[in-house]
Length: 364
Image 1 (cartoon, rainbow, N blue to C red):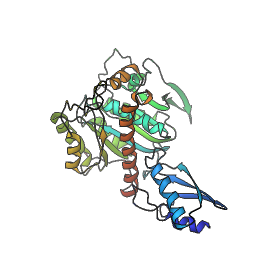
Image 2: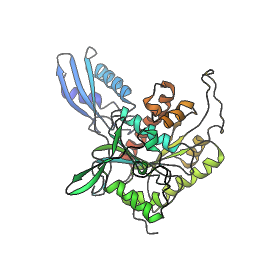
Image 3: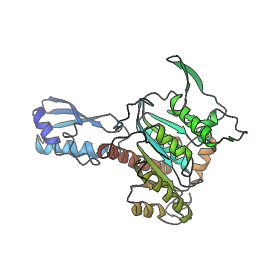
């Protein structure tokens, strides 16, 4: 067996999402051959890759079928999270992907989705930050159980910067950490935009595979400020199945589809999809209607990333500061993990097949 034999065999193994073989994509490294023992490393596009086991099996089979049926194959994995930034990297230089989580209306669970998406990515091995950009209604400090805490300051190149609070392996920053909870944030648009810019320029986010931005509901100032300030890799739209939420979700999708924005929609996730009582685990009750989000995704030809059920423990975890992804509710965790897996596949495909990410220049 030679290294060339192994590479030739692995050229028959496709990366499921990118549609090309592992060798062409330069994903095979460190081939070692010792008698009948063969080992090599596959470099994944994200540490949270949900296709890892499929690629392991396909690679082992390719070597045994095409090189030596008695080969003892060891497949190792490492990752180099894909990125497609082309913006000079002056801001958030260490952040590979910036993902905005948006919704057309409030109350659809966007912050819950953002928090658990961040945790699912982190549990998959990625370095993740979470920026709460909902200035008027921040909630991530509550969901992560850090209300009342204050972030530290440090000096970098003679300039004071804020250090995000780390919890459950996530770097978290929210206006809720800086203002008194009893006080309402009564700011005009320019002040809110200024605060968002500070969250980008004056917070030490460091090296991250993904920065998740929990956006406010609607289509307004903050959305424009974010895409004008940082190169957003793509957006994830959150909706619930009922008609009122879907009508507003359409506006969110349409906003980012406008010619002057050109920010790709990674996909849509449907929250509060169905209710399953604990005592009737095989029953699904579609309280808000059935498959509204799935149908909307098909209508706009965007990826449908998954369905999240209504579960009491999701609400309780958010209130207690223990998100569902760090609980022991394995069934509900799987729904979020599946959604996160679909999201990272969508991000990898976006980086491979679309124009580079850049800051948007909006004239009006």
